[in-house]
Length: 103
Image 1: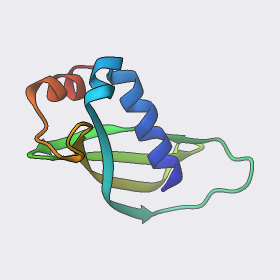
Image 2 (image 1 turned 30 degrees about the horizontal axis):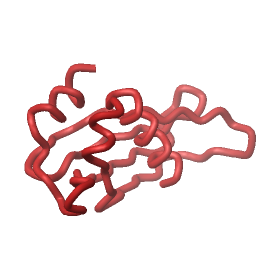
Image 3 (image 1 turned 120 degrees about the horizontal axis):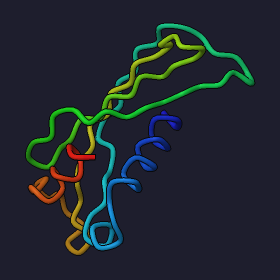
Image 4 (image 1 turned 60 degrees about the horizontal axis):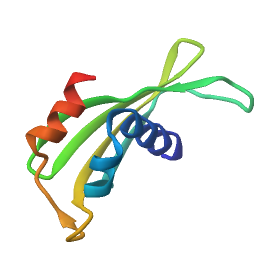
């Protein structure tokens, strides 16, 4: 989960800007991980993020975890967009959707 969370945070940092980050942040509501293989200490693990369906206050992220060109796990996270000012869930606006799906 840590690998997926760290990668998600880096992904969002690439997409967002300072203004957006002042207005919103994401929290994870759910993790789902299917383990398909193994990894060992010093293996080079690659985790990538693909944005899935985003609707309402939620957005799905898909994260294959790869070791030596083989998918060893598939993770899916459900994230919720939070308004920084109100500290409450907020709908994923077109402004956020544009960031998620155009880069």
